[in-house]
Length: 282
Image 1 (cartoon, rainbow, N blue to C red):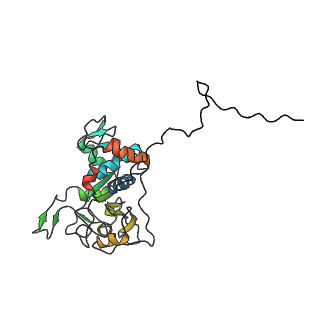
Image 2 (cartoon, one colour; image 1 turned 30 degrees about the horizontal axis):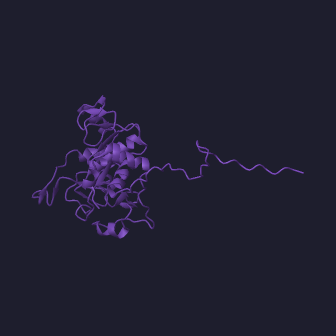
Image 3 (cartoon, one colour; image 1 turned 120 degrees about the vertical axis):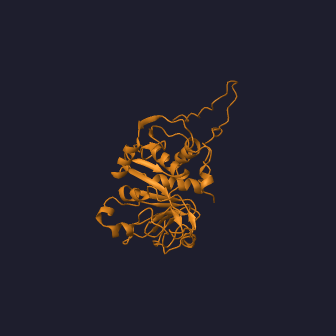
């Protein structure tokens, strides 16, 4: 005859009384606050430099600067960043901070060499941009007597003909996304094609990023296409805010959500002062 199975003993407290079985009181890590529109825009800008290798990132604007730094800290560790003057910086300080570690010297001549040999990806602004990616930052109205004088042509032509050039537009509207720019500063796909092989050899516009979505030129005629919508934005909103017929695929995905690690970097390391929310407001 077999003996009964022993009953499992109950753990006791130091005083000898039984300790009840209770769930762990350890709290789980806090769930990050959902990403804001500005953070989606910063992530979209970062993606423009994904797997870029050892090229110079030239972001113009707060959100593109956050994006370039985020790319450097995550999926593009070989990306080169500058202080905007004559130095390559080796760490990624908060936007607006000066606590930078010098990684190298970048005199003007060397900077131009990077531009002319395609080893830079610049993200410029655009006062106007059209369906083929022609960009205007010079004037609004007739060139001979403009209604408004802007920055001037500056380096836009050589940027667009010699190295990849993307654009950042923080306020997507028909005043910016126009049927025809008043003056061509950055060269678009139609103008480059008309100029011939010398203009098209290195010409490439990877992306246009706005506060509404991400756009590219992956169409047969290299006209602008809606690639992704930022969450909360509809296709109809984008169409209403665009002054030309935009190519819209049957299904448009949303811009990918930042990971918890990416949000922490944006909020605590790169932009703890929240400057991104001044450039993009929803």
